[in-house]
Image (spheres, rainbow, N blue to C red):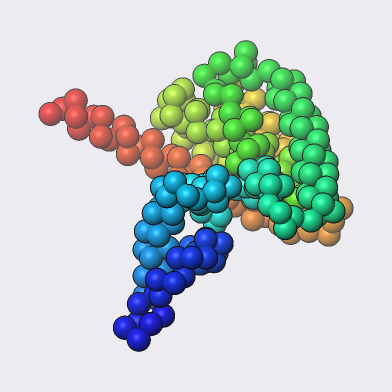
Length: 265
């Protein structure tokens, strides 16, 4: 910064430096005024550089992508597939590193395709589209959500279990929002709070299917965690599901209250 505590205009000659500073500003926390100013400074000058006819196409591509979506606001695997072709065009790139990056991406993508194939088979075998036609098919979307958090190869089992959990949350959400009566949902919530197969008889037929699969899924998860010495974690998962049911139930009650009030008015 200069004597007036402003960023030096000479920094504008270093495109890569501006990009690096711009990306770094997204790690700031509230109250970091210097980084707030750095963000405005870099955004302004990167925008000017991008529109400059003399700017080379590679730099324009990097600047355009950075301004559109900073590194810290994107998914690592999407950023990898976007950045590899850019890195390949750089004269300073390493052939060994480039080859390794492509190999890493392709191997991991192949693994994830197999996981998604297994999940699709699992979903098809459940046949919920025929048994519970009101339920949305959000399997691929759910897998993509989880992939945004756990993309590394060692997290394969985690991805599988969390995607299934995500699918069951969609099933529960649709049951509360689009199908179940308030009385049925109260019984369903009570059964989940008790978390016992003995509650099966108190449920309507279509809810028995969901409840049975929910118990089976958590049993499968518990067995897997037990093998890794982490069986205690299933308690937290079960508590989370119970909390979700209470939350969904309260929302349903609130919606019904609003509806009745609106009708009376």
